[in-house]
Length: 393
Image (tube, rainbow, N blue to C red; front, side, top):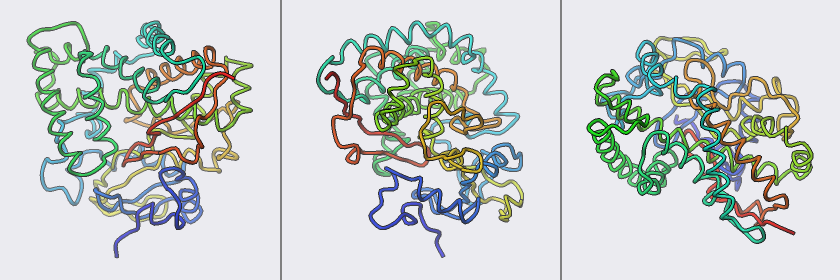
């Protein structure tokens, strides 16, 4: 019997993308691990409880390499090269070490003035009174500009790059995703080849250099992962944080009265909205017991970071957005060996974006009924397609 999708588990008429949390809560009440169908990917074991999630994310018997999957037949899972997300130690360790130094807190602190300059320029283009789409006019161009500057993607290519990227992480159709994969692969192949022959001091240029230690497929995979992961999740973090604040006016007022709470607001948003909704699949290298559920060798396991970060056994009153909360242990950036490498950059971008926004546009409200907002979700990510807001009295 085929397992149900999460949408099929939702009450009739309920929009799972807009509000997945009641479904998560119902599953969690029945147990920490459930068999579900992920459209386009097949069946897997979904982990929805915090304790079990932490255990999965540190269990060496669960591998990220698709070749451990019982359904694996070809290298089709690596259409955009071999990358850290699809690798295990020692390969993962080697790949991560090549770029980890570029994402340390010290390096990110040095980038902060540039982030602030980009955010200020974007804000200056927004009306002081009137409406704007905070996604397309602010939350999106900020991280796209920052990561493309860091890696060395030409300004003229950034719009089409984001179109490909967005299609891959939140596909509109299998055909569109396949086309985006082919076109982005061709683009990154050409871009890294140019960086190898004409170094320009950017991160991609350094990685494309002959002495970097990366093979052709690894270079392609690294370029893809850094560029896509380096902005998609941050777009959703910034817009999701603003959405949460507008939905909770008392919390927005508290932030206005005490801007030092901006970092705490970002952390609470990571827990409350979880832009990275679920992890990539892990595959059991051997039979194992997971929180009382028997997992066969080759079975796929996925952790719902969103569900785990609203587990009431770890976060009291988890459905309440509270920027004074100290949500230690939230799984917004994952956990363990695959904890998000770009977490310091995402935190810095979100904090800068939020701090400048509430300072420069003190009066801000939804410009449409929030119930009519479109939430896009894919296998891994969830975020707003747009966020119309009104500025001024």
